[in-house]
Image (cartoon, rainbow, N blue to C red):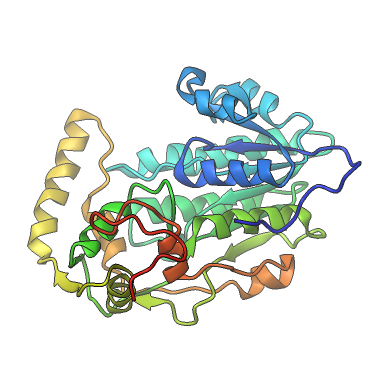
Length: 332
């Protein structure tokens, strides 16, 4: 998929420092940065587990967000920093804050100390709009507040994506597979509305930010351009058209998720692990309004979304039953 800009021939190739490069969104951003002609340098906890980055031409910097020397090596000489690393699992506020708040503060502290600090884009979440819903939402909001209150010399953007999907996603793929088989399990109201964005469009927005004139620091939302977002009925209808079969909405009873979520929270604190499903996560999933728009982002960067749900699902393989959807080969 084309991205927003390429490095002009004859210019010095700019290095972009990336955290969270092995995650779903981080991998896509790195790929699009390379395709656009940038050099990419990535912070990795375990270089042995990030061989794919090296084979793709990405320079690996061993370390973590907690180590100042690692962060200095990561950002030295970089033209910009794209901070994708984040904690999405946990049962306590501390588990989320260590990365989503502390990581932002550590990175910003290093950048502020440089003679010529590079720009910083951090991947936040639309959940930060409702910090009282969950530990995760609160941590993302606090990360944004760190930037707003402590970034004095660093130009920054906190980007709030809604639901992100596309090739390589493991969180939504099981849901789309279930829909492809005719059942749409919904954890909240089928009428709840939410925005979505295809992962390559998100990466294109990052590159548009890199190519734009100085962008006003602040918090920006992003979506696929569909006014009013989607509800589950509309998503199910889109899947039904693509897969050539009826898709039935199945509202999951609250108790069926509440019980394992509560068990996870207690067990996680005893056994010291980070679960995905918790009562707080259910508050996010059941929230009735996760709709946003990209108007301000477009005004500042010129970026516009290129992919809406139907096309994005066609570009996401492996979910429509035994069929492999390909662009141009769609059931209608």
